Length: 106
Ligand code: FES
Image (cartoon, rainbow, N blue to C red):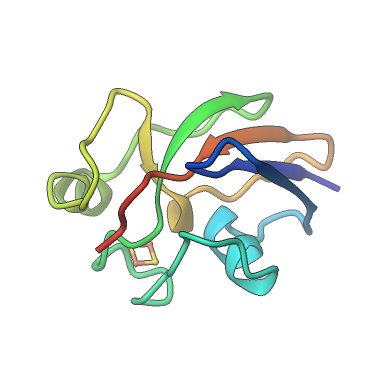
């Protein structure tokens, strides 16, 4: 099963084993990872699941138009590795991801 490590703004981290095709946002909300809100439920319209994708053994498609547009409005600055966690769904059972949670989401 895929694992996702969330690195929090204070430097601590939380690693979650999740099911394939579960989004990085859904896994975070289900395990109460601080700083991942997911207000819109995964529709790419709130930006409260912004993460910096620091490492992944899974290759994701680049952001689609909706994600690109929303990433312009995130509370913390957009970076080259910014993604919406609701749009990241590891499909590989052996996938290992590391994402950094930004200091602000709203
Ligand atoms: S949950 Fe709203 S943009 Fe990802």
